[in-house]
Length: 456
Image (cartoon, rainbow, N blue to C red):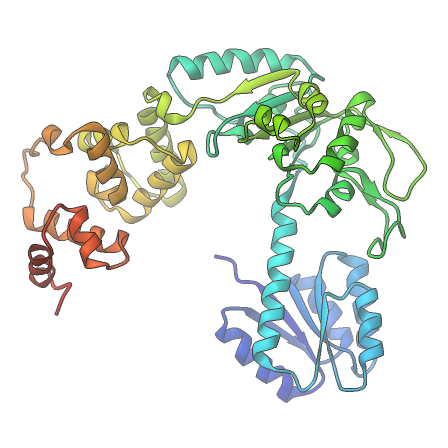
């Protein structure tokens, strides 16, 4: 896991040392500079996620350093450190793009909270807008042998050829709506142009218009430079509007206007821009119900769903479960340098009996976990989460009816020990709940805990 890198800039050695020790204990990667010149060089070379910047520095001041940092990386997160009496300068730093300021002598706990919030805010911006600028990519694989999947592929092949029509992809969470959007884009003549995805639910309503249409310098308080919007950046390509059902009504009206002729103005600008982009939107909500509740526009719904695509949940196409599982086994074998040869029959039965409320995403995560934690030649029943075994048993009948003793035999005590451990893990070591998971009385369960060393 990548550690957040923090650059500490202060001319006082004791302050740098104190911050370094405290931040490293919290799991940050810390680099330090004593002058503004050194700070600028380190920022360019090492690209920190956040900068703690003293306003009073020898040579160039902290304010000058802030301006230069923002010149080469507008998104860099900077927290100013200021002595008492420097409030006016600190406020000026905020106007220049600093995230916040902290007065010396500072409270380390309070500073830690500000740092965490600043990094979370930065991570959110990177997560909700993912720009794909690859000049050429092949369409992603859509795996499955069910009739529903075969029909979906027939529809997608036709949709990819309809270059400009808007598409609305509907389905439960985890069914692969973005995967479908990418397949359409990369199978069309737009494949060499950008594919841009944005999560409408994750972007505040006040920022979404700027993200989509862009803004001119000075259009609002924080508009320190001109910014192109996603529609402009994606000219010739595709914009994927995920969670469109969460877009607020005012923004829906502006999107509808854009869809009429693909023209717009940046916020604060007078020039009209026209672009050639395909809009693919997606939602897990019932938009018809949202229309009845007057939280989604009827006219926008019909404009978006020129071509509607409905994705079937995994529980309704069980033929795809094992095909997908084997695909993920091969994928994670490559990723983690493992050599799992296949899936044992009992594990397959468990997966087929389970209803997969998280759909393909849940199945993918289960296989990833099994490949990482397992050390056997095959993916076995004991590699699956206990909730899958338990729910599969309840939904599909007693799983042990399908169990066949392997020719080489098994160590039944090891199986029992592992089941006790899994029951404790899934219930966060609540003994009563764990006992119920295995249909045991509490005394019998505690006896087995002592037997296997889980209870002293």
